[in-house]
Length: 427
Ligand code: UD1
Ligand code: CA
Image (cartoon, rainbow, N blue to C red; front, side, top):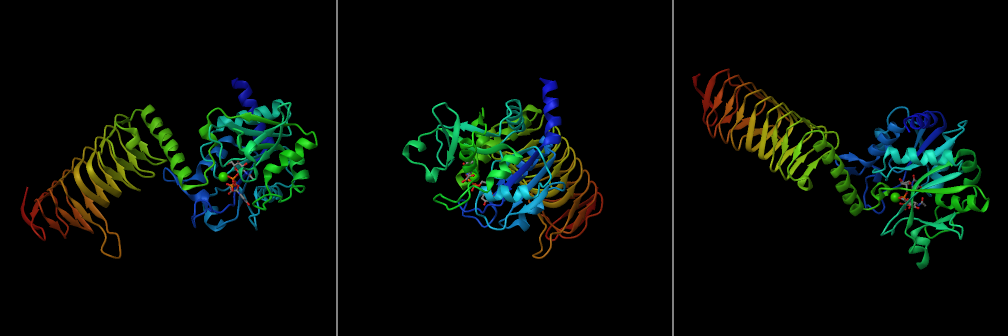
């Protein structure tokens, strides 16, 4: 099997070009933001599709962009060609646009959709393997769904061969009962795809050029059309609405949490723990319920986080840190063995090691115009309810009394208190 897989990867590297369709609007999302930029676990859904392509390593990749392409192209890595679909008149036209960027390429064209972020690489490898083993002209990835509504249905003839795809909007009652759906993922022999795309007409309710119509054209010409059914139907999910986005988010969250637990993180209650994509958490850290951890946060080993903690972008916790109940942190680094146990807001700051931040401590980091930085050095003891008005630096071993308002830098070992805080003595 390993050898076969290796052969397959080599073939993909040489013979497969991927076209990612991502030109569509956000009509059913009722959004101004292009659909593919809507986020799953803190990351645009297109990012997951791009990762998938990155892992597949095909010979060439073209992303077809259209609606607000200037926003979407920022997310497209170098090495991926961009083709602009001028008028959004359907998936067949989008593929035609993509193919124009693949002039001279011979081989297999794999179509992916930018709104299909849960798809896995193994599934694509299987699809391509099947496509090559059986020398198929068009291999469709299909799925058997209990509730197929919204998707194109796979039509089969009396020999059970695929003879077409009918979109939900154009389907009659009998066709709507078909449970096998088109995921949209298809592998084609490029020459045949190119030669027949032009025959597609916009004869449907939406008056669009549907890529799915090519299947009937192929079948009528006796080209070999075949389907591979996906095992995990969640992977098939295309996201068109906010409700589907929420459902996919939930599935993606489960994947992220499962992986963290597998890597040695304790998550007391996974369903109430929201950890974004790209977060790194060390072994033996415990995450308590109702915690939100945003993108690219780094957490060390043996930390305690939550319950009800909100760690936002740019947060890094060293090892053995406690970020306890009702904490919000943003753009802040916290050193090892530091405690921030109860109701605190730390924004734009650097906190050293062995620091104790008392309950209710707040960094006043925003002066109405700018975000200002706070430095708290090692072994500091911040009394409860201290307000730290940034920019300010609190030196090593300093202590602030409960209720202090710190407006000026505090030297090492100073003990301060009051509003504004004044030096009482040195330690
Ligand atoms: C499509 C399929 C349907 C399938 C479903 C799977 C067609 C006609 N229908 O329907 O059979 O069950 O996906 O999720 O293909 N796009 C463009 N340019 C366009 C139109 C669309 O690039 O002019 C892109 C979109 O950005 C999206 C993808 O193509 O990423 C699919 O388009 P969408 O409108 O979401 O198709 P569905 O109605 O979901
Ligand atoms: Ca879709």
